[in-house]
Length: 174
Image (cartoon, rainbow, N blue to C red):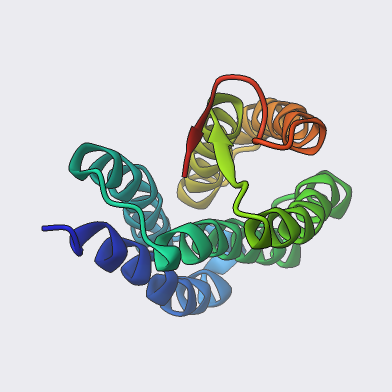
């Protein structure tokens, strides 16, 4: 069972392309199929982390590919929601820029063996993933409020990651 978290991570990464195709082809970015695939992939993010901690397994593959899969899934959703004019571009730039900057930070700290995930970052990811799923399920604008909350928490998490060599207060190994 030690392999299961990595399989879930790989499945999430593999889901990015079919998800992107479903959302790109959707009318006005409303797609039950895209939302369901996105939500399922998002759920694997939390499940693989839970299983890795529960089983006491941590692999180089998981440490590298897990955050990459998360960022790709979210960033592709953001770009396509802007393309469909469901989100304003200026609302996505902070999260996209955060991902680029944290990717660089992650790479430098990973080389040094200092990569941790904090509760604030996990909360931000959950809020953003939930809001994006809801934006794909309804043409109504109200999920943007949840996205804005997730974006605010996300930027707070970025500051914590940047300030701390271990990923912020109350951090846990990834």
